[in-house]
Amino acid sequence: MLMGTMPPTEVYPSERVIVLVSCVLSFLGSSLLVFTHALWPELRTRPRQLLLYLSLADLLSAASYFYGVLQDFNATSWDCVLQGALSTFSNTSSFFWTMAIAFYLYITIVRGAPTGTGLLCFFHVMSWGVPFAITVAAVALKKIGYDASNVSVGWCWVNLQVTDRVLWMLLTGKLWELLAYVILPVLYILIKKHINRAGIGNTFQGGANCIMFVLCTRVIRTRLLSSLCCGHYGGLRQSSQRLEGGYQDAEPPMNTQAEQTEAEFAST
Image (cartoon, rainbow, N blue to C red; front, side, top):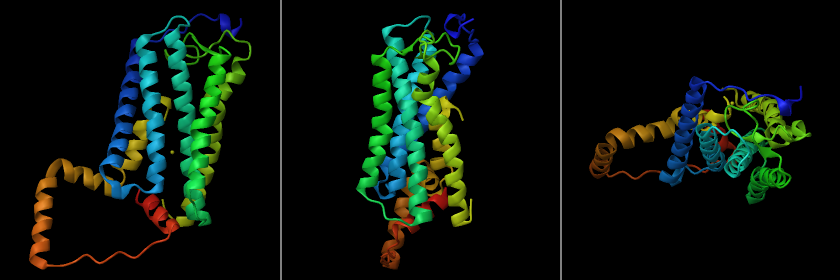
């Protein structure tokens, strides 16, 4: 029996609930990453700038998956194609930005090579441009559509009626996912060896990033707790100390880009 003629796979309510909750947590986690980036300008280092773009991709990914599972498509329709296109673009972009962050850390920490706007522009072209081109081609060639939940959990992706569905499954996500699973461990092992210290499914990417880069990052965690619990009191106490002691903060020594990046990576 051909895959395109297979009956729809039954998705149980418990499975939908789990995926919907995962999407919500991912959305909230990505939103928190964006919020902390906007709230504290002094923490906008280049690695966290790259993390911001990853969080934006994860926001769109979580929203598109949430709509697809909630809608429970049973045929190819305009909103099915739109949802499939958005999830394809955002999920593929997320894999590209994840690898971009790893490459940036490797270049700056291990190689110690200087980075500038040229590298960031390259990351933008690859991480936004390539997924956009793939998604436009898939939609134009009518490869995105209803997949009967045979390769998803309720959302639309590659239409299983097309003959070259395996090729488009690779191009619209699986190829980049497999590459990420191979490249990321190698890069992070090299980084870990260099600095002598110590990367979830599609619907929880934003939540995982939030745990790693917000809740497990001491500086961000401290500032969040301070602003939520005792920000006002801390501000008054700091002002009082300055008035009583009359001290002036010494200007911190300038660190190289590699040292700054290495220190931030180590703090996570």
